[in-house]
Image (cartoon, rainbow, N blue to C red; front, side, top):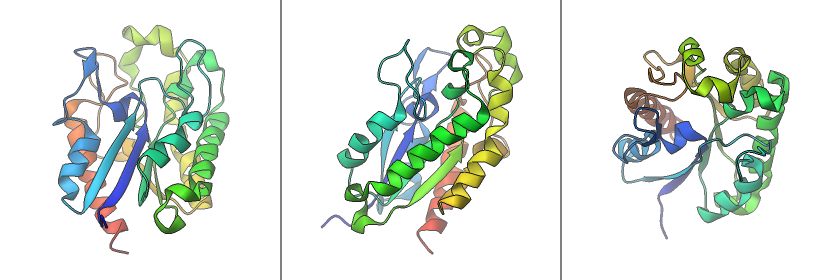
Length: 218
């Protein structure tokens, strides 16, 4: 029997590894899930499930298949048995065209957490274990970039308001919690100001490796 602990990283473009400078994707040597797998060592296996434009539970009529709730169960079952699911979603929900309040975005995140917990078939021994990450907020400079048209005026402030609401969700469902924006040194690139820089991918992986090691020592 494979005794590796399996971790599912479920997120959007900042989990997929979108590189705003090239318009493509960071290499496996740069993306935080791949780096996390490396830092955690042979006893762990980290599975990437990041998708550009993914939301928590909301359908985007301009991009097919972005509703995170609809793909969560298949993703979990594809990689079962799971020992930990990491969620990092919510930035795309902040787009003006969705007309969502921060409370509605948090409610979407809560539905994802509920779905993951209840999907017993995918958990090792049926025991749910979730690490809820608050995405680092969009930075002010995005207003002068091409992404401003897609994101809109209100997305900046919404992205800044998610942390306390997500923390309440984590407490309510006994999830582990980390506010990525609070990590010293975490920053967005200077091309669109809403995607993590290569350096921040590495920093996030290091912080997560330490946190996850502590989780599994308990």
